[in-house]
Amino acid sequence: DPDAAKRKALDLIRMGVAKAALLKPEKGVEVEVTPAVLVIGGGIAGLTAALSVAKGGLPVKLVEKEEQLGGQVARLHTLYPTGESGREFIEARVRAVEAHPQVEVLTGSRVVDVSGSPGRYEIAVQQGGERIQFVVGAVVVAIGAEEKVPEPGSGYDGERVITQLELEQALEGGRVDACNVALILDGGGNSQYSAATAAAAVKNSILLSGADEERQVSVLFRDLSSDLARGQIEEARQHGVRFVRYDARRPPQITSDRVEVFDEMRNEEVSLPGDLVVLARPLAPRPDAAPLARLLRLPVDARGFLVEPNQRLRPGKYIPEGLFVCGSAHFPVDVRESVFQGYRAAGRALRYVSARRMVPVAPPARVVESLCIGCGTCVEACPFQAISMMEREGTLGLSKIDPVLCKGCGNCVVVCPAKAIVMEPYTDPQLIAQVEAALGANPDGEPRILGLFCEWSGYAAADLAGAEGRSYASNMRILRLGCSARFDPYLVLWAFLKGADGVLLGACEPGQCHYVEGNEWAEARVEQLRGLLKETGFDPRRLRLEWFKPDDAEGFVEAVNAFTDDIEYLGPTNIA
Image (cartoon, rainbow, N blue to C red):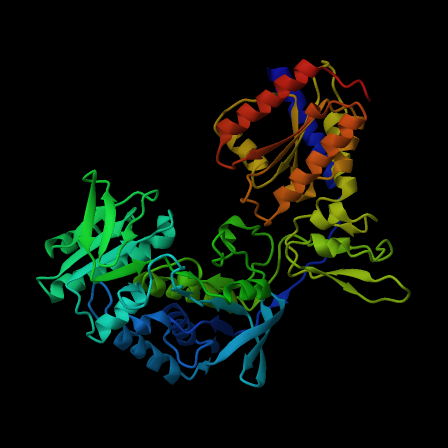
């Protein structure tokens, strides 16, 4: 309908003009980046990163909690596929790091405090009874992971039933005399976490069978990762290694001298001799991973591994954190991948610190001091810990927003009961003006529908729908927000008062918010507002929250059209 498209275009122009009329210039903040890097962890990933940064010309502080550098690799018998000794491989890296003039090694140390902001992190390290403080521009986290002792009931005794790392040490010392060896892989149902363990187990099966042609070696597995080299499995089979697939619901049973298991591939019960049984479990996060994550404000995944902020999926208008995670601190990886990630983290840290100065494109949130009542609500609501309370004359404190830490989600603007926080270009007057412009003209009597869309999900999907030539309801007027955290119930109520027949809120899917938890706040606010609307006799179906993918134009069109159909069925609100 050309006429409807023209009316929509005119409304969008009115919305843009209404917003532009209220824009105010904001003074930018320039951040000087300290030309130094902290590397936490002295394993293969940390050593690689530290040496690469040092060769790039920047000073490095390398903090390792153990008294010696090397990490888990120093305890490995051989590395696949080179066959090189793990100890010899890592010792060469350790010597290179310790000899480099740009690297200061702090062993027997741990990071106990991190303050400051991106580009200038103030670090406190405890080394024995001494507290060492210094400033760096970026941080590389390479604390690795660890092998946990199997739980009671697993059959583990440290002698006949051992862990994979204990097998590595036995191979190194030439202490494996067993004629029948069974390696039991337990991937926990997730190949991402078990791939490195599976590769090590297959490598060890080759070593065990190759060292003694009479030795019978079996690998019991639930699922071999697709990342595992097919050639490695074939090599193991050529050495006589037997592979037995089992169901997680029927795990292998370890008896006094055998391993009983149901072979899924042969569909039969199998009894394997087991003079030596190796429990190959995925590596687990180190105990200090969670405390370190809190210090650095890094998220962790469901298993407790550190998650690096993905800058490609984060707001590029604000200063990035300068925090980089590599190696098994992120999730279990083999030596080759650890080295690669160490190089990559070093390159990114060098690029970040070499900028020397950074200026965010978009202004952060700002406190209007004359309106602030010092309640501290904003402090609790900030997902980036960018807000603190400072003292001022009188009994009330004052909120202070760090312009470097602020990422502009707008959550603080919504939760502030005094409306003392503003954030360009999403101030209350600007948003209200756009709503009024969007709902001002309605000559044909069609339902008036307002969309409040996060720019990373719903708004991006709308753009893609237009680029692909997909059409959706022409009576939808879209207002762009930086994040769903900026969804303000008062703005929604104002839209209904100005004549909106329906309001559709568009946010990133759960777990995908670019501002950590903005969509969770939005969901809670929508549910609360729907409940209040219902209590007053207003149909809550006129307010809806949809999860959108930025690359799913088809899903966006379907959701918008479905909501429009529902509003047409409900009819006008007759409020305005």
